[in-house]
Length: 240
Image 1 (cartoon, rainbow, N blue to C red):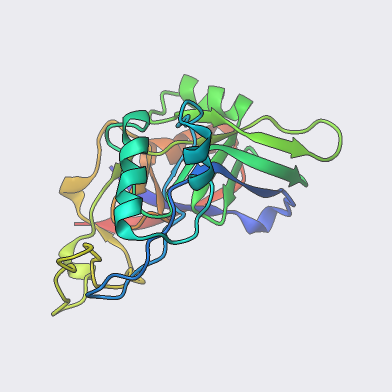
Image 2 (image 1 turned 90 degrees about the horizontal axis):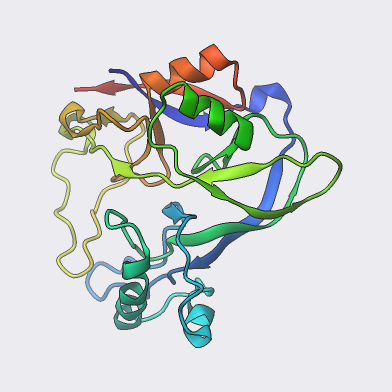
């Protein structure tokens, strides 16, 4: 099975743009006392998570990405955990709930926002499911579109799969920070996937170590090409 990195196709002249963010988030964290890493990572996104049952004063805190002490982050994460998928990584800056805001322009059948979030038109999602593509959990967006005939977009909630092969990691890299777990290396320019870590039953997912990287299977690419769907390009990734 081959695997590919998905990216926005800028060659088709689509002008679609979302001035929108997910409704809630976990805040960032203040710098680690050992490695000084801090802030947040907004690429992890769980748009199907509903936090509306939490108290209003907690929802206010879960709408502010500003960094907080790690103790407060852990407290808020514990509030969110029962409402999130059991497999979800709840890291600082994670985005939660429906994508909310404004939209404009012309969208393809598939659309990527900053190459980290994958959106699909409602009719394209139905076609992909009928074609046997798995891992497609679409979540409605709360976006007001300008113009006539606005698209019905859904944001995919992506599982986390796959590890980097050691051959693409720097030699002599530092171990993760013992305090916060910061991995201590930069994302490689050339990605090599660990073949043994890749799923066999999920056709679209987010890389477990590189959360801004959306990966699709050969089945996904074949279905997109066969159905004539557009808006996204695919770059094959090496596996070992």
